[in-house]
Length: 388
Image (cartoon, rainbow, N blue to C red):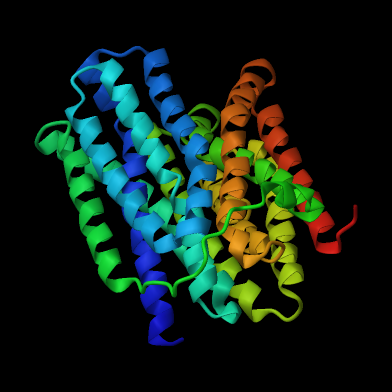
């Protein structure tokens, strides 16, 4: 692979890591907010809800901005905004001022998916698109891990806001480096996304429905891994944390590996990406149904690693598949809508999963995700064969 490939992919991946450090630091900081402002469990939950709503609300506006003004401007502005949002979180003097700071942080992260996807598909040779997407999709998992270590570690050494200030400084530094190393695009006419045209594309709409199913598995599995290992297996919370870390690492491996295979295998791009995506969904469905039978930490860990490689590692190919069914000048808006479909599921799937645990146990809860994973695989098959 040539130097230009690695220059662009490295720049976009580092951007994604820095942006994710700022965004996911809020998740790691919930105990710090509780202690600093004396929050209840409900008030802590509202912090995460406000963050997610900000992210979801600005995905489409950032998708429009990316298509009209280019990914370079959008990504630099988005990361600068994320850094300022982290500063706002650190200086918030009360809970009621913390909420708008968190909302600002969430809105700016809306630049990530449309901007980074368009950066890859506009500037990388098509034969290498999918492995490039897989590599840059490692950014959120690495960034979330770094954010957790940064925020919790520095809080123990200094004061609780120190991790947010360091994350903000890192974000501004990466934004500056991105401005220097990422090449400016050739001047093109600004375009307006045709959402009516996108929604009239039945193939695209079906893929969005698959994204809802994949997103349900992603958000719920990461949220309940530690609790399952603790309650069902009987291991310690620390052990559950190690299993969650293994899950995240496996997810990164799955994204890169699937993207590489999608570039190397023969056949039309839609068939290659769709076939691998369907395998990831169906394989994840099998593991979800098997997971409740795990009786040891090792067995559960193996199952979660498999889920990481398969269904949780599917988001890279999901966006790659979107690129095969929409025009390149609509990719920013199409990616934003695709991420919105994934994110929306995070609002309903985790509570449903929790309700099933309370009423029927983990067999029903994991079976719920298994059913959605099989449904996702079936919807992707419809996309491949255009059966409508």
